[in-house]
Length: 303
Image 1: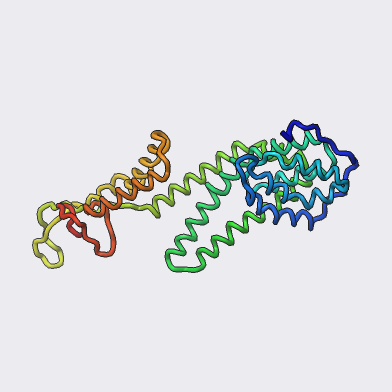
Image 2: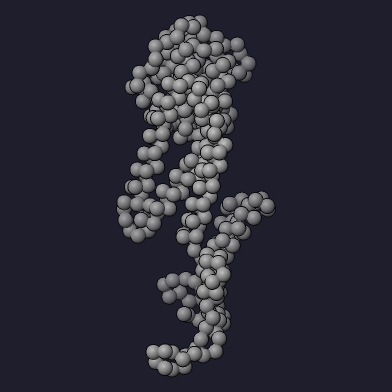
């Protein structure tokens, strides 16, 4: 394996600092980090291709360039949006012609913590919040919704890629210490915010409600002064106990099946589909558009 080979640079004279145009070029190349993803080395091919412009300017000796490309083709896997943080540190070490084993160790140490931080920052926070806002706009018929979603998510991603590249390249290995110092607290806080947002989205866009109306004698209509049938609205009773109780119960059911029973998300989707179809057929769920249940049951009287 390459990691067992003894690699060293021939020319150990520090190279000139990379210019901004080269750093910018590598930022855009980092978008293709996972283009050649594989299960043996994960993002290694995309990683090497992303930083190659910088390596070519740093290592003018062809043997050194070959050595650098060899150890940069080893296993690599990190969050794709935060990869420029690792790139800046590695390029700083490459520019100083640091020991190859030291560069390997730093690269491995830097790529690890970014997975949890990136997931908490993007998948649990930025994307759900942005999607929740813009999806509501799209549902209302506004074309601005999907456009705004792209602008926000892509804009934040690119701004972060640029900033991390410049910041980590200027700081070198000190950037790792600064990032990881409060990484656990930051990840925990971002995860809590993400869970809160996902819960709100589940309530708003998964607001399943009961359509069951149970007959309960008669009452006098205050307008017509006539005797009319009276019904008990089950959903209104549940709202008095805990609003959105049904979506919460369905969410907890899926969580239990996935966490405790080791169900796959696909199985949960099919289960929810069955519950929805059967519930509509029996008139259990409230359905808009004048839908009438296929099976006549006592609680299917319209409101």
